[in-house]
Amino acid sequence: MRLVVLVSGTGTILEAIIGAGVPVALVVSDRPCPAIERAETAGVEAVVVARENFGADFDRHAYTVRLTSLLEEAAIDLVAMAGFGTILAAPIYDRYAGRILNTHPSLLPAFPGWHAVEDALAHGVKVTGCTVHQATLAVDSGPILAQEAVAVLPDDDAASLHERIKAVERRLYVEVITRVMADQPVAAR
Ligand code: GRF
Image (tube, rainbow, N blue to C red):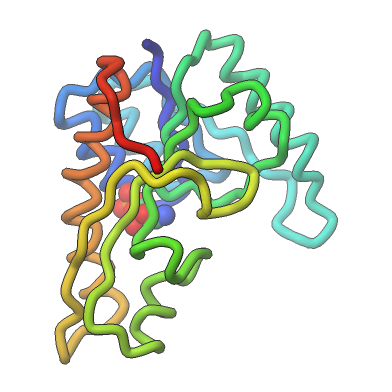
């Protein structure tokens, strides 16, 4: 099974996936970012499919078609988003239905969206966590495959809490991806 990891940021989860020995066929980002450098350092093929803009007139559909075509050309079977910063449109969810995974730094359905950690802190929750789920067209709401709780400590800020959550994501996401690649059952609701 050929896996692509989609990234936009620092790429520490990508690094954990590669470091665990999961075969990554390709890494794709939507912008130049440290994650691409991590892939190259690890000897994994890495491609930037750069967004033409980050404004309101961004053509999400055209971008998704470009990305999906690249994945098809690379004979990709399974897509794992790991901090990917572009919301994708229907074509990739049609082509890779049920074959797109995501990890999110909250216990979904609480705190969807890009600011999950800040939102959890602002809400004053005492426990948050991470969720590995199938990604669907509706953002952060696909079938949940795995979750794990992380305590919010009294002196946490967004950086310290996010780092504690990411430490769990690096293990939990690798476990789920490994099971999916081995065709082992992963409970979805
Ligand atoms: C993770 O918390 C992921 O859930 C979120 O972005 C973060 C990616 O971290 N969507 P990194 O770039 O792998 O360090």
